[in-house]
Length: 308
Length: 306
Image (tube, rainbow over all chains, first blue to last red; front, side, top):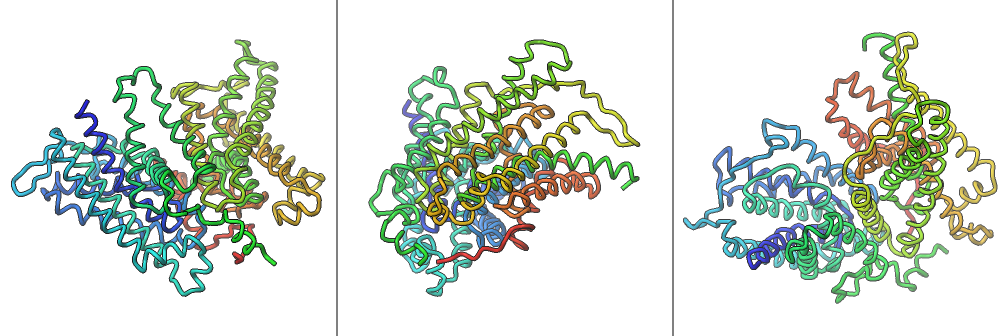
């Protein structure tokens, strides 16, 4: 039971990393991307392939995961970010599916549907971080989350963060103020993707095996739910969102009711949650910052927006 | 390319695939034309249409052998499915999208993703993840016309999608309600001032789009069975078709759908793209179109206003 709770916390950490990346894209910049699962997979496979085939250490693969995910982020971002958000949503969804398609079919590199097994455990100063002894692993994941939180929170307050928020609130006004919209959007996309790549590396050394079936569209939606539930544009809230979603996900197993509650139940619940949150509480459960999606709700702005 | 008959074979296959894409793309494009938002749940509405049609057909047929009755039963089932799915589409709009009309673009999109998730998993819960076969209502033995192999199913797809599209064009261009629809898609506020019941028009748009999706869903289920996630890939491709033709433009969706069907078929048959990567073709096309001509083939360039 306690062990199971630790597992939930570890997954909270891994998903919180992805959710923070998503938050930078969606919460700060207002870009609805749906391919965190794709970047997650790229990071995972980078670590899996480099450690098993070329004998790299886990720590050496981290920058590779981050950079590889970021470059794919730029690759998919450059053509689509110049366009409206709706296109981005579909194009990124397509990208996520393509990644899974490639992982499934490129047998010589990824092992196809069977994936890659027997991934070595992480070692640090001669000390092995064994995923079966969950405490040590949890500490490592927590450190990653704290570092990412610190960096992304600072990024959010920096010149770049303010530019991103300006783009979210009014793209045309931001453009008129001389903010290079494409540059900042691509940057946000690349950073968000690289954090997801790191999360993927952690996932690999936690499960010690990778298969394409782990990186479905479901993962991207789950991450999106975490951001929306916690509160868009608020890094701490997103971590809380990740915890709640993971707790709900594993709730049937935690209380031993997995035989009674159908497996679709939680997905239906998450879907409903997205709708309900959008209608009644778009700012998420922690609504400290008066963030209303896109700020168009305000009557005053509405009046200003009306064409004369 | 081997011969002329081979060319016509691919043309036939591409046209039937394209006809289905076009039917589904119409739903995306009509909603986009009026609400400027992508109804993400459209593919799952299609899946519901396929299931309802399947159950209605099986109930009506009741074990009867193939014949005139099964043929009639199929079209009665299609009508039932269209009505039920249209109702579902309108209900989804009322519950999940209508409260968000004044919110930013992101809100209805997120809400639609939620709806799509609920529908997909709801179907898996209600009807199981096992795919269900919808029987052909007629003898589907292929026949040979000058070296081109054609199945009766393909002919039905062509005829049904042709009738639906012509009907839709007549409706939007010749009726009062169609005129109201066109007006609403140009300027909602002005239409309201002119006495058009905009809410009614929006509901009608969802109803028509969903009804067409139900037809598409049933036509697909004949070949590929019905299963809870069937709407996802086909919905995405239909969306690509809508973008290629020019999103918001009804003629564009038809053109884009048929074009995409042809490109996919010829891409696999002529260019030798492996069938496993067939889905990648559509996304490649999407990205190319977005880069080179984002307004699509028949779309108009709309400048964003402050």
